[in-house]
Image 1 (spheres, rainbow, N blue to C red):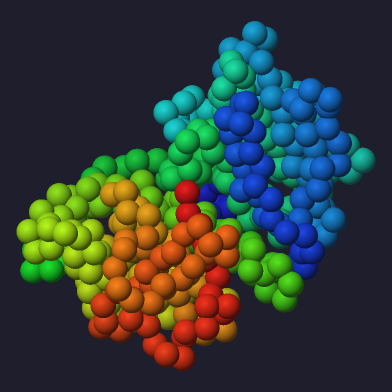
Image 2: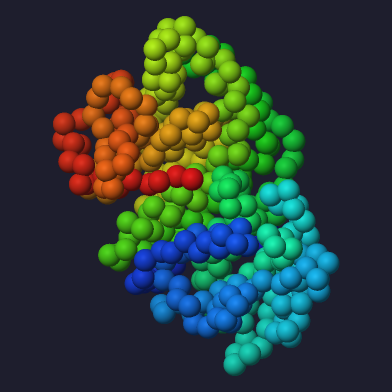
Length: 390
């Protein structure tokens, strides 16, 4: 079955342009401890009274998402529960097992005949309350190739740990298994930082960006495009966070003691400034093809790839949040720009969340300035959209 997914990865060159009309919703079940950050527009079409089976349909794209919970008393594994769900539909499937988020899980591609022929992807994973979660997402066979990115994005948004939303999705781990360490070197604030990422991280992260950008483009001319952009950045952050965990740790261990010695009263702002100055010196690059994302995946940035403001700002968010420094991602379609915000208390221009509970010092990643300094013509806070990261 892996060959099917590899063919899908290789086909990430065509974008689709369906129009969507409803806002995104985060599906979250506190009792069973799982969540789904699904694309905009799904509606509940049917559900059992006990909530263990929910059927979502989409008003604009002929895609169905089925969420089913099986209790472990009757099933011994994720693959057994997934096969049970597919067998009930008399589906022909090819299923593989994998370890994801520390658990034995399963993924499948399947075909079935109902009122017409359908194709889709599915996943099974253990969750709380001695249960297994099964997801089936499918479309009519006639439009499956056009819908495949959307289907994969929907299932890949699953998290089975209600406390952690910062690891690659199940499909990314399946398609890009760990393949050994790759050394990365960086010169930051006069210090040599040597660390490692996985050899598969650049390709995996690039694939994720391409998948999510293809979904984002479906919303290009829709009033809910801002929600789609927010989801796009949330899922990139989630995929990138653990890929950069070793680098984040090595960087902090090397630079924070220096920052603390330089500014004992506020070492966090001294540390954050060293990172900001570093990314401001990156090689600037934007996509030449209008159909391609400008976003440079974060592992590639560590190895020297050119990048734009949103990649830099997201890298800052990952590096700061990974060491406990609260940060947000800010983007502005009006200004065609992105920034990072941090909750560190220091003088300068800030962004106040609409609920008034948190204020973030703004960081410009493309000009050689300090935290809190932004261009005067970028000062209208109503033209900035905050992305709250997990």
